[in-house]
Image 1 (cartoon, rainbow, N blue to C red):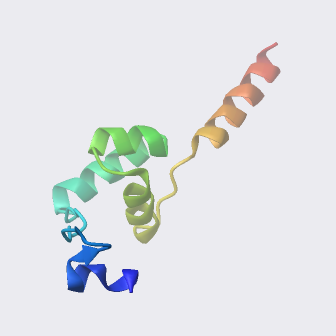
Image 2: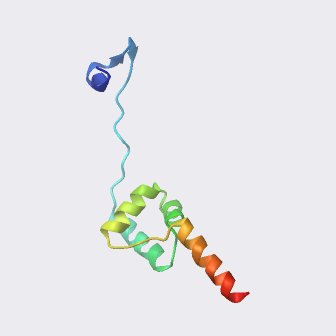
Image 3: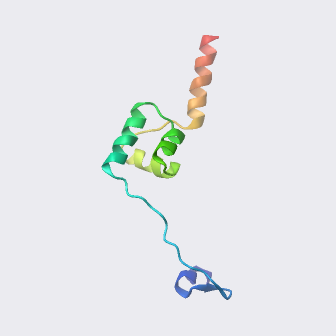
Length: 87
């Protein structure tokens, strides 16, 4: 019964309003900015912040474009490896 709350409008006598998920379309300038951030070596977190979009959204769109953003763990691993070689 609770799965139909959006049709019935109430659960346990309490009114619940349906809210559609908030989504933003990817426009051509957004895609170009994503490609630019990738070419600059941005991390997924940095690209997400720069685009003001959720990381999942940026990661999904990048994957659709054949791009791979390094995650925080991957970047830390690379930094640690560089530091070990310079010591």
